[in-house]
View 1 (cartoon, one colour):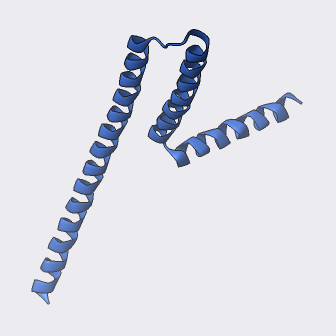
View 2: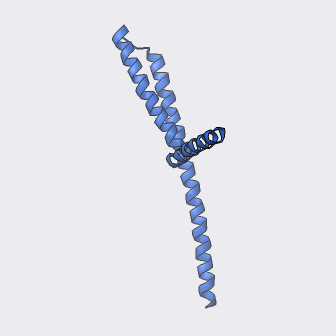
View 3: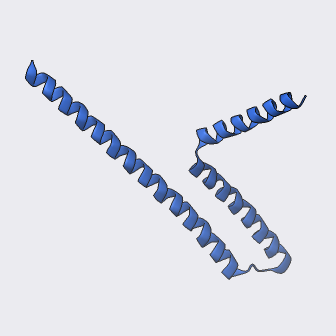
Length: 106
């Protein structure tokens, strides 16, 4: 009984890890930020209905923090893309060099 339960738990964790791997960590962060933003806006609308105003400083600080988080995610993504492009360029150079050497020998 315990062995079956452990195997089932491992398979659930494996499936969750594969699902996260397919989506990507940055996309999960952006999804969480989006959900937080929807929740925050709902709370601010409820506060406005109740009090007739919202705390402007707090709202601006939260918006700035979420925009900053999205900016950092974009910066990370750009750096990853640039690094991959450099690796592909290096591979292309090696391939061209080997093709040139083979062509010169023939």
